[in-house]
Length: 367
Image (tube, rainbow, N blue to C red; front, side, top):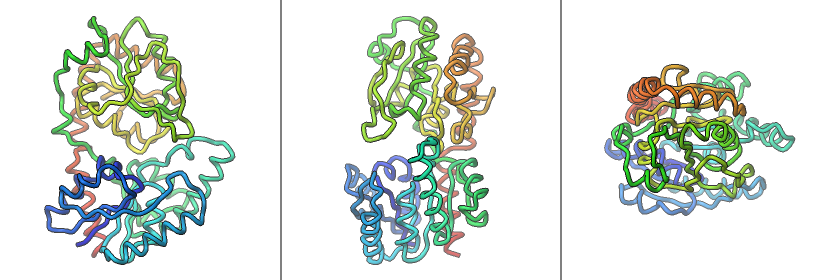
């Protein structure tokens, strides 16, 4: 079997799809990574994966530029002649459906900010996205969803036929790498933590839709009870990016070594407005941490209320503060939730389970 993995970003394939690609190689299949030029081409080549580049303007809504990209991809894919093209995220899903010479599988990794915002522009773009997905569903053999809310929405709105929809929860997590680990004393010094108060951590891009403002407001209410840390870059290219007054939160910027910082924390928080299945919650769950998140699509796939964490309404900083305070004050609950987080990660989200699910769908399509 010859299979193409299609994305608008090399980092997307590198972080989330590489285990599946390596499993296919191990089984003797030919694997291609098709994406615009980026920084990770050598990493794919090193694994024995063929790399092909195509042009794209990520934020463009110009139909002529999109048609040019589709036409370019058609030519590239005709030369590769793959048995399956597997695409990820909105634009590649559309490109793949109209470009794949044989079989096409698309994965809806999350619906994004246009399905959160209700401005006129968001409603307009959302309508376009839904109509395009209706068209691509006719051309795609399977549509994979990463959370049950998104799948139910697409089926209910008759965007995707139920017969072609499949649920594969998340991109999986390497539970061997992200395992419970002792915290580094060096990080405590970097974060200027000199006492034994609990450490609360949020990891996300600094955009409004992640609930950054609510995290800051909640932390300000509890500033004397715990240490509040934030890791993530300011996504200047995103329409909801902003530069907040951090208040009681210590902003640490972007970090490559998030595993070490999760190990340092006692509680991991994500008050996002909507997600696919959030990577940071999966990593924290796998490392045995107590979780607090919003009761929204994606987050509730990982956080089970009163089992491994607490769920709160989106955009409600007081409810977020109350949940955080509950865990700050109850060490036994944190320990119990952390143990269940690890179990849930192993039972439901281990990357090998996702690999097996994808391989089963490929076989199903080729039959």
